[in-house]
Amino acid sequence: MEFFQIEWRKSTKKDLRHIASEEVQKIVDAVAALAAEPLPHGCTKMHGSDCAYRIRIGDYRVIYEIYEQRVIIEIVRVSHRREVYRKK
Image (tube, rainbow, N blue to C red; front, side, top):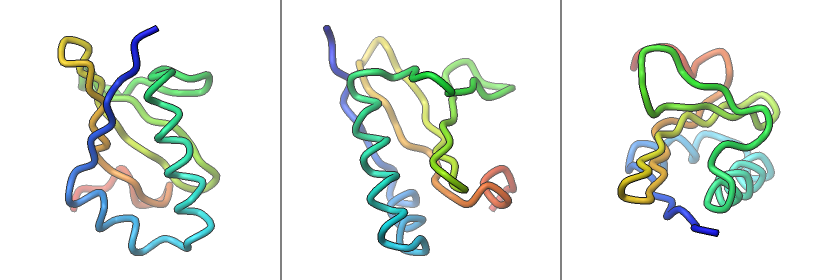
């Protein structure tokens, strides 16, 4: 079984600063699990992109892109569900 490498954008790391620490731990654990299973049960493909997906962690959403050729998962955005789809 091939494991994916997880890469966080700088902006995504900044997004985590605005989230409560117990929620951050849940998010980090869920993202770490993506390395073994990039398409877990409950993930949803994002419209308008070939490689973008999202997962739910409570009231928060993690948007990520899978690059199978490079075996990388890039975490694009982490935010509350009411804000995650809005443009910055």
